[in-house]
Each structure stands twice: as structure tokens, then as C-alpha cells.
Amino acid sequence: MKLIKQITLIGFALILLSSCAKIFYSPDAYTLAHNQKTIAIIPPTVSIAARKKVDAEAIKEQQKTESINFQKEMYSWMLKRKMQGKILQEIQALETTNAKLKKAGYPKPPLTTSELCEILDVDGIMTSNYQLSKPMSDGVAVALVLLAGAYGSTNEVHVSLSINDCNNKKLIWNYDHKFSGSLGSSPARLVDGIMRKASKKMPYMIQTTY
Image (cartoon, rainbow, N blue to C red; front, side, top):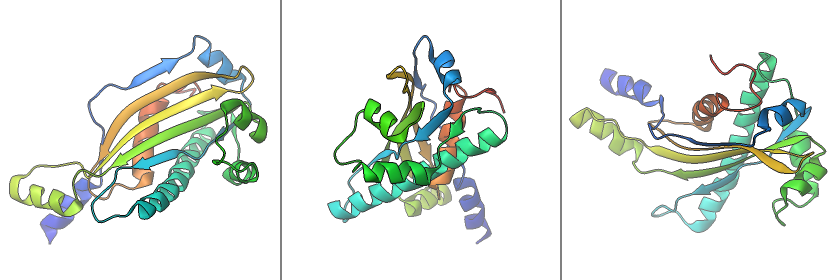
């Protein structure tokens, strides 16, 4: 029992894969980001790899749930940094963002970046795409630790984060990377790890070290 508890505690840690992130900046990214007064976090697009014994409708519902979860965690993370003085921009409340998007019928029909900016009445928007897969079950991961002392990832996330400037109607920053989490990885833990990595290169951040 003690060993299993130790394994679980170790497994809860987020593992960042060693592959390099792909980062894009427009030449004026920092200037435009600095001039933005209010930004909005759009509900992420979430895709989940098909799994055996899980029907398509269940996966669709899970994708909707995870989109809400990831948006909330991204908002909380950004808001905390604003309170710490690391971000100057106002972050539009999720209730306001989501109510305006729902009124516009989003995500059906799909909206362009310019349309999202106009509907939300903000200076910048943050969009994201999460591709989730689960290559190894928690039970198999525990068995591997017990039998071979090996740690395997139970969740993988390929994430793409983008910042668009509404006044100039263009993409100013994009961060593309792949992460993995082990036993018990939650949206909060995954988003925290992702945002900590991405924020070191994000034009909104005043401080890039912790």
C-alpha cells in the first residue's frame, strides 16, 4: 500500500517532453501586445483520439467538457499572473466571453478572427487547440512501475496557442508543442505545465522567469 501511494504521488507530476517548441512572432508582436488593453480567451478546440469501447457521441461530449475545463484553467492561470503584476492587460470575464459567443451562435457557424474580435469587443484574443490522446492506461502504468521501475505517460497533449491582434487583424504569436502527463494528470496540472512553458515566450508577460 505504501509503495502504491508513493507511485501515485510521483505519477501526479507533469512530464514535459524534450522536443522543442515551435514559436512564431510577428516582428511587432511585443509592441502590439503592449498596446492591447483587453483580451479574451476563446473556448479551446479540443480533439480526443478515438478509443476502443467508447462511442463517437461520448467522445464529442468529452471534448465539449474538456474545452470548458481548459478555458477555465487558462483564464485562472492568466488572471493569477495579472494579480502578480506579470500581465498588464485586462482579461475579459469568461461569463461575458461565452455569453457573447453563445448569442452569436459560436461555434456554429465558425467565425473568423475579425468577427470574434468584433463580437467580443476586445483588443486581442487568445485561441488554442488541444489534441488529446491516452496511450497507456493508469493501471498499466502502475504495473510498469511495480514490475520494471519504468514510468510511462498516460496522457499526451499536442497544444497550439495563438494570440491575434484585433486592431491590426493579424496573428502576432503562436506556440506549438507536445506534452505528456503521467498518472492522474488533470486539466489544471496540464494547463499549468503548458502555460508555464509557453509564457516564457509570450509577449504579454512582463517577467519571463519564476
